[in-house]
Image 1 (cartoon, rainbow over the protein chains, first blue to last red):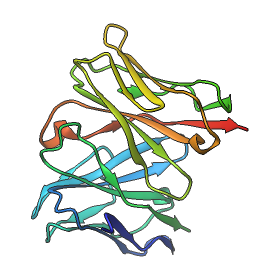
Image 2 (cartoon, each protein chain N blue to C red; image 1 turned 90 degrees about the vertical axis):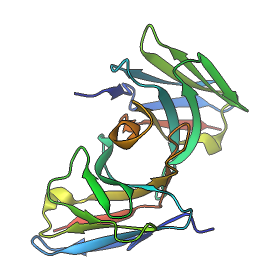
Image 3 (tube, each protein chain N blue to C red; image 1 turned 180 degrees about the horizontal axis):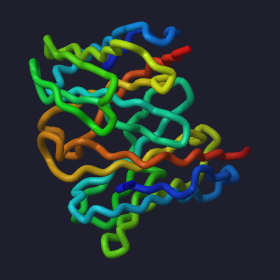
Length: 114
Length: 115
């Protein structure tokens, strides 16, 4: 199984450009998440989804939009990229019934905004 | 306001010795605590967890201890191996469903195990 797959792995944008990060999971997980990781800041939750067609804001949602049209996919969009959005983005998923709340992460997408 | 704190950004240990990574939390409603391990250019991977009703959980070389009265948990790695060199994240959740099930992460501790 591929698990959680993120595309693209790397991207360089100019300020004001838009882009979409795609996350796909093949584990039939109900819950999906987008995190960003910055030096010295740990992992911060951007948006999450508890099921197909539903999304909710996390800790740092400003400047991002998300969509969950299919259960296996969770898209993260940047409508007008800013240098502050330079980061490594991680998608994660989990079973709704997971006792411990364990998340399965993708390998990350490194975004640079010039 | 940080609810999960890892106050040591880095830790260096000799191979074969014990590594102790610490984590403090402020929210007494957390019901599960998890440790994740992250290598460079990879996503975090789950390592071990502990329920708030337990005080110890062991898995091979990894043991997590929970002290609820002190709101403190620690991850012990014995013996430490060079392959354990990674960033370790402590995480906690408040409950089971919806936003309560969201994990809150600490900032991480970079462990270096020297041969």
